Image (cartoon, rainbow, N blue to C red; front, side, top):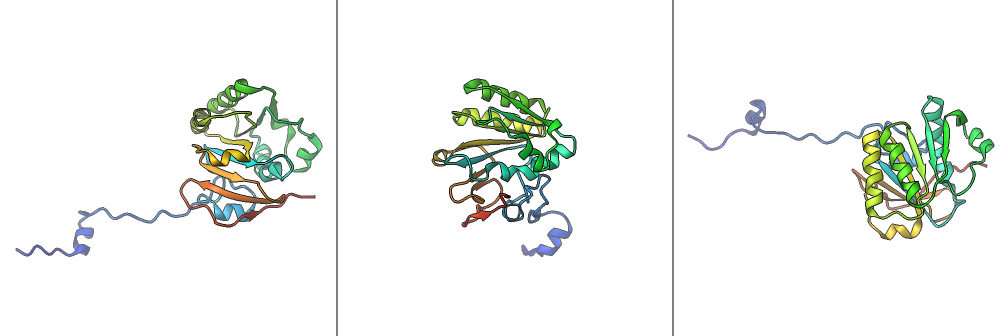
Length: 205
């Protein structure tokens, strides 16, 4: 008996598993910035996951980066929570960006209390997105936020100092704002390769 068997025959008889290339799916959570969406594997923010935004300091468009997403969520009657923002949110600017302020909540906390509050809000599933500014967060704390975002099926965003880029992180996505306003580098994106060049996004007037 011949040991040579047609591959087509094996496939027809379902005796060989044939993998299929993973199709690029449209992100369920588009960022609202075309260049960034095109560069990310899911076409937008990783759903039910933690994303880090690293920056040397405020004023590089860090809020503009998220406003399109937050506006879309609040207009759909979804709740957005800010935990320990470094400044009091300027309501007219957020409203001008299209957010429904009735769906925006701010939690003032510091240190471990801020991390605890962020984790509890995410784990509860009570918000569609959460933004936090942890003063200090080690790998264990970030992993807890990642797991809480998965459990609560929420978008989690952590603004952290740019120097943290040298440390490993469990976040599904890491972005760096380290140049002029409106420019972002993708340092890490789960499920794909980070683009080699910076991307641009609109920061408005």
